[in-house]
Length: 444
Image 1 (spheres, rainbow, N blue to C red):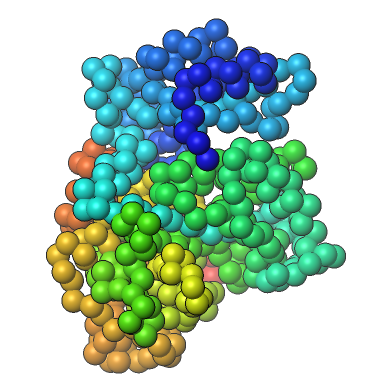
Image 2: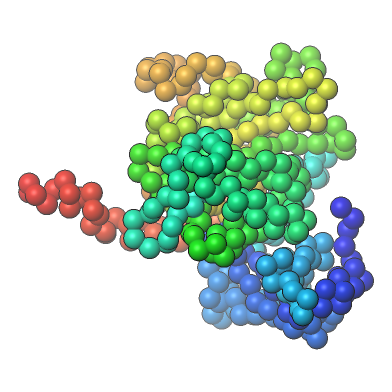
């Protein structure tokens, strides 16, 4: 896709009779934020940015340093298909956040990812990702979640009642310039997946934010509710965000080696070693909610051990099968993240951990081709297999000690996120749950 410039944006706005433009950015928790300008303000905003008060945005400025500037990224200009009519249209554009002095703002997650991509670029690499974001449709957001169907993996109608919703979502994504590879029913009842085509990490983080909004928007317009909550149903699979990753040097896939039995380069294996070593430290970022840890339990296809293997789906990292002549498709898939994370921070953390393995020349760890869940505790210890954090508190403590993640996030985001999650954990610990009332109240 050709780069978009100011002339392209202004012409597109005129041709589509755009009346309002939504300036999009993201807080540290991954919630999409927006404020609108009118068409009369577009040209000056493209040149100078637009000011806003950042003091009420989670993880942004304190009240005494609240002034922020949203600087549009021209290449992210798109017309919102659900707000487009013959009379008028609404467009969106992603923004980078700056201080009034014109410096990149430390608390901007998009800026965090750009800094980490610059680190990779300085080493000669470009980072590509392809996430698989799963989600559920329910009849309502209120009360007990009620699925629309009882379909299973790859089921087609009549069990898969939401296939039309997926179709409308794919059409909306296409209208926004986002390429989709596949869409299908997932394992759980009323659970679905739409896979976005592999691209560079910054574009993909923008696409992931847009994808989550489009999924919810299409559901709302069809009188149902879509959720990216990691584990909304007890006893069923949760929703993951498996992330496929590769590093390229120019047009060459740096993860590919024709002489290796698994077609993986030593560089790719050291990247894997970095992910495995630092996985407990970055789990707070890739799995940031109390509910995230209800998914990371045995028996539901979500990993809990820091292992890798070829094709084995019980491991945290797997290597998809190599296809002859498809060297550029050689990649690593990490299966622990969930779709309720902040994609800018998640991609940053994964890249930082992998680059640490490359730069520090981490020892290559052996693949575990057995079912890791069937290994004894002694066998896991012999193989140096660690366990991912079991709850949000363990994840907080693991990240607090991590210099690698602190460097990747920057002091502001690192400390703001930890502070936010400590408050969430304290609030959760004080709750009296239905489980406690059911199991304790009648007998104690």
